Length: 627
Image 1 (cartoon, rainbow, N blue to C red):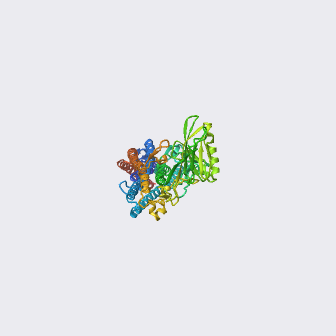
Image 2 (image 1 turned 30 degrees about the vertical axis):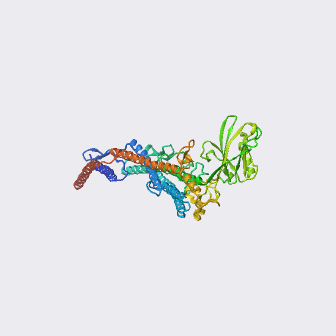
Image 3 (image 1 turned 90 degrees about the vertical axis):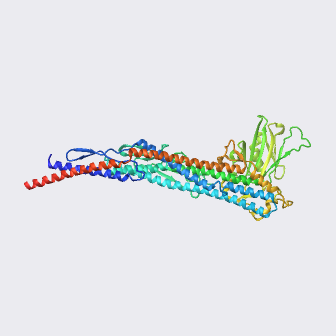
């Protein structure tokens, strides 16, 4: 071997040694890096002066375990995000053993009413009821505010998550570009591969992803539903159009013209776009949890407290009056005369209901009809779910045009059934069958109105109001009056000014009369009402029916169970994730002892090459002296 060739071999050995030592140093340093999951090494051939020795091993990575690790990372972040929010919701409802809960406030109100019924002429008892009623309203207000605060936090969480996801996607694509055409496996390449894996892990915390390896260390990233996020050196861009403050009336809708909450879409360089929410493309990770909470779980929680507020207000103010039979039984009308009922609509408010049942005599089928007053024709036609009754047909009627218009609408809707409507005088609505026609028989008819006065001559009263306005369940272009009612409910200002109206409901009522106080107490404690399936209690086909307290206990228990289940799921996901992480570390992590052994071998090889260079240098000097 010539001196020049020996020197060249030694130089190559030193360079190989330096590259290998750089990898070992990187592995040892990264062994203490949080989230670092693998070691990176190369097959490095190096001259030792006496031959060629292979030092080091290959870049170790179990791709199957890593794919599972990313899947479980998405699941863990979904579960932990949801558990955190539901535990916060449970805190808003309050400690079950505390008086500062909806159930505690409700019980305090009924206790105050019991004291009033015992001493109706007691001023302190009357004030006690008013104080308890205000506490109940304030508890509902605070609960609603807390729920919307959580929904707003979910909206902000989506804003931040989309920003982090876009940065991760951009970085993955950038590293892909840097790796293009790079055939070497040096320390800088290994560092880029590790950095890219960290960005993919960061992305998997936000959404479910699938990584597809390509040529030359390239990867493509997709959602598990198949939407491409990164393709080689190109990254898609996520867009989130945040809409500002979240309220009970702000709801996401697949139709962007009807949605009042932000939606996530993906935009590609070629101009294509996909709505990731309506397409159901994000199924796990923190983003999926934020969406589920904002648009489902917390919406249901708001529906529960709104339903309680509405049922409580209506229980005390609704008055149902049966229709007067027509024609009168005496004298007996001729055979075949149309028969039915007269209904007084003078107190009918927007949202109030006329109930009608009739039998189709041809098929012998009974039908239930709910005629709802609306004053805004833009909301028509109403859907059958506008009422809780699963067996009724809902007919919305615009009353803004007067009785003539009402009759036209009703006869158009039901005239073909044999049911006919007329207005004999004033605000009276007459509903009749077709008599000799024999198509229909009217079975019953009633009208439910909302009491608006504190001294209307009956026990019903608007104790609770919608921010000072009468609550009647009105349906307008902005939605149902019930939506968000828990946040607006207040005690009637007239009662606050004159608590005697808790007892006195007419000119002849004595100060010791218990009729109204007993009525309020009975309605709140014993009255049985139907509740919408949107609350998560019961179903559309079989609505939950029970007392106000029973309903309150049902949904608070439901929320408590949901929070406990979410925490159990989160804990379980953590166990799975930690187990996979340990397994990943066992096959891909850094063994310090092994790395130190490699380092010692590299140091020996480095010394051997250095000695070769020193020897060659001495031989060159001797040769120069001879010359």
